[in-house]
Amino acid sequence: MNDIYTVLVVDDDQSIVELLRDFLENDRFQVKTANDTAEALAVFQQHTIHCIVLDIMMPGQNGFELCRRIRAESSVPILFLSARSDDVDKIRGLTLGGDDYIVKTASPGEIVARVKAVLRRSGSQQETNRNVLDYGRLRINLFTREVFVDGRIVSLTPKEYELLRLFVEHPRYVFSYDQLLDKFWDGVGDKHTVRVHLSRLREKIESDPNRPEYLINVWGVGYRFEGES
Image (cartoon, rainbow, N blue to C red; front, side, top):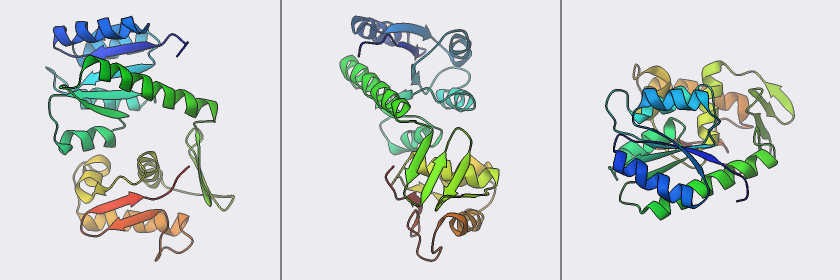
């Protein structure tokens, strides 16, 4: 990697911050640091940041809240760093738009390798027009928020579009009813709420909504997106 990238490391444990800074700088990254979400947001807004390594549990607002705020304005790669290895935090982090999830037992060298990997993916996507996802009959322009089926633009409601975008950005990942309710309806509603919206979305993008090829129901659990761009 010949380009100079700036990585923002956010953690309330100063020893972890300093350790990661040493390893990243040794690999010729520029490093900015913050010890809480407020400081991190200020650094992010004042500097060009190419990647964020973000601790989840911190005093005040946690890393999830910072990710939510950053995702409202930027697609910068975010790697969550957590002391917990269970799937709950991992699923939530990916749902909010995280690009990777690293348990703190990982070595600093592995974390640097993950940073390099996510930056390579990000750079490759930019070179091949990262804003357009092509799934054959279905094509999505993330920049213009336009969705095309068989070459014709289809009209989606804002919620339908955000649902579709979540699925296409995490192909084959199964999102449960509860996860979808929490993200899109603030936990208010039930399985029927999710089913109704997914049914309407299927009617707009599937050639046969009764035999979907993209939005697949995982019986008793939730839904996943099938397709490769």
